[in-house]
Image (tube, rainbow, N blue to C red):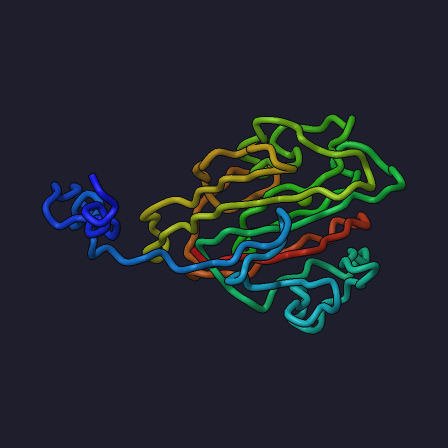
Length: 244
Ligand code: MG
């Protein structure tokens, strides 16, 4: 076959079988092109369509959960750091289904043990916690381990780095679908910690609870990203998401 004869079909076909549930033919020439997204230069860098929640410069875009005023954490060396007892902070941006990138660092000076060491948390929609804890050589209850869906599912691996080293979370989040108080479709999370899959599209049992069962309750279809003040000087940086 010559190149000339081959060219007409490069953009697809109009005589192939229809793929069930899609309305499109196999290799359909009329199927829309995926949008172009320019990837970040290095793994973890925000791609061109990412929404930056924290760029290392300021806490604009974050507020205190306690009173809705300015976030009281501090910005140090391109990161935000918990200021103990100022309370949780949350993004002013609200979103649902997403790809989320967060980097975090437990304090280099090891203090406390179990849940009292480098504790914080990444709360999707403000209410579903993916645990942040210094779990390097620091046993605690399994469903409170870093990478765990707190109080529900432990991570499938402990992929924590040593205290003081930066870690990455890449999270693919599917928001729950609610009809008032009635659950229509549960939330699900895929969590990659330092390049290791630790939750594989795990379906959540409900909103995060402490010493109590998780449960779904009426909630908005979108919510903020919340970061926890658990009294430990955990840092975060390079936080961005892509709505899905
Ligand atoms: Mg926590």
